[in-house]
Image (cartoon, rainbow, N blue to C red; front, side, top):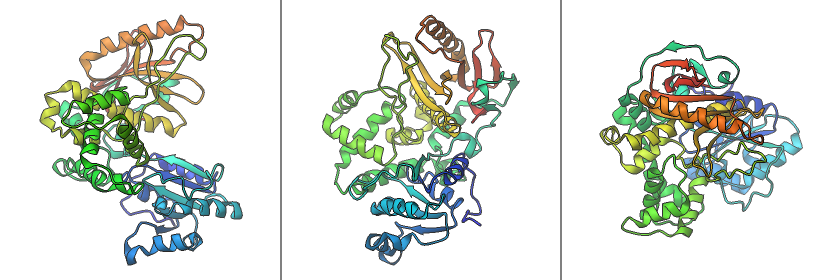
Length: 426
């Protein structure tokens, strides 16, 4: 019997954890705080020790620091929750795995990447790393799951009519976010969670991750700029200029340092650029598209309300794109896929590129309103024809427009799939 909580909601990563425990000596589930790592890991564990527990004056942490072996004993798989509190545990786990030579001995959870000091070995071949995120819409029960992203590559999309999701509902889902602890809260309660999350980040986590005290005002300005540039390819220099337009300046070196800390806290999830031209001379962009790990954090950083977003659909369009791309990344990774974006020197671009392990890929435009489908489809068709004319390029296997306010799933005469965002699943 595992330590599964009575009201545990299954996660897509459950299957991956199970498979990796059968393949590796240990599995490390890492991701932002409060995304559900502990509860999911308990679902696979037979014993647990909470390294960061304050009980008895942080006794567990003291034991781990004194002798890591003291906290490794227990029924396997044994969960070491928040292992980064004592970085030397990583090497202790690796050594134990080497000595026992059995699979599935340990599960580690971490909400921050520690300094390399004290971690002597990468753990390659012994410890598998899995990235965990906030809940996707299918996990939180906010999508019908009628359209499988993976199946689109091999099977025709069956036409059907589904329930229309309103603009207000999409705004609510974006503001609420995918935080497991707020799933059962009403909207007025749930909308306060991301803001409180950022406050903790600013006042505590940014300083605790490496013991360096950071300027609160500068952190707030950086978060606000990242929110304004959500779902764009803004460079560090662009963000620096954006902040310089405020009352104070930050400086490029400080921005790079603070972004590194946010990465180590798993708060950013940038979307890398895609190159379908393996040997072509066509210049493609290399800048990633910027995202918070959950779009609700961008909303909170901007201080946006439902009314503000309703009256600024351009801004909400970027946030909606981030919401869909958060889920596309999660869905694709469940079967070994990857998520990219595409932009080249001629300003041809694709919102989302989903690549399969076999090299096939799909080009998807993400639009909020159904009135934007025709233009998006025309752009996708033109881009595919251009790629087909390049002998060195890999043209997309499928084209699709993922639309928010749309209740009809269908294949257009030009071959472009129209997919209501409320129907997607892995």
